[in-house]
Length: 419
Image 1: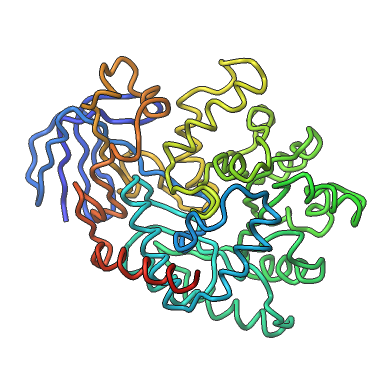
Image 2: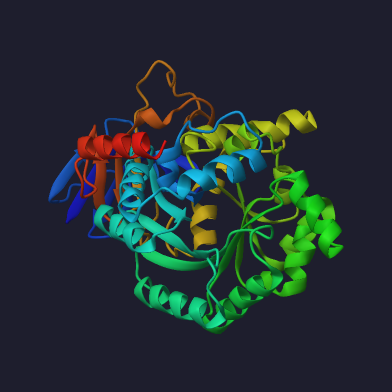
């Protein structure tokens, strides 16, 4: 299908330009001044914003089912005493509906790509394929009593099934505190053999860092270096408690860092040293984490926090710019997740784009649209989300393979049952 978006303020190459964008099938084929062409559908953007869709580089979408059930607790109490126990009651079908709700929330908020980390993979894959969102799916999280050969057979099954355009696999080792060194080594070896990237929660709390230092006589990044984890293309979530030597290790290995500020603040985990990472050349991305620790899958909220938290802790408002944060939420995330030709509005790139309303009281006047994206706009201002040339959300209407009211009803019933 061919789309012609015209009369748009377009975010491209770090600046705003006025003009048109043409999408043919799954690709952006034209970005520039107004042109007269035929198309299956012409969309007058009416001076609003056309920009890349957001890349949510760390999410546990089915945790929508646990939104609000364990708030105002630190990570250990929240996770081990509440979330893990509630998750034991979830069925595969529950996870399917929780995933669909998470996808609906994200496409409504302008998110076009996600890194998904959860369990009951068949149901998650079904939801992903039905919806059409772009995803890198983390496998296996934990071993669940599987031995070496069982784990390799499990991974073989899914890795072969996920080697597609919209859904790709990543070897996801939950954390150094839920997996043994032997288990981590098995996953590292598998990743190396099959040339796959790896992901992990890392240095999220002071307790995690302290426990690792006592047990292994080294910090979490040093431990990953020791076991060969960082020899693989790596994406590390949180990285809150890192000194300059830890950051240098990640930079030297070309690791990607996903900062999740809302979750880190809400769980009292701390504030990641984003400025120091940026200065050392680390590719920084942004994630929401799960909606049980956030509690919203909203990249506008995350961008605002990324832009402002280090300004406050370092007493310097100039250290991170709005466009740098937008890049973290779009093209940096696409790079980390291995989605080539995504994350930017450019000819030849995948048609993952959103339209954002600029005609609201909180966005007028449009003196600086780039600043407004980070400091003024809201996820509720998104009125169209396109992934791979397919519109998944437009003006209150969802095109994700399930009726939105049915999703709401199913998820409400599930939460009532498990609680």
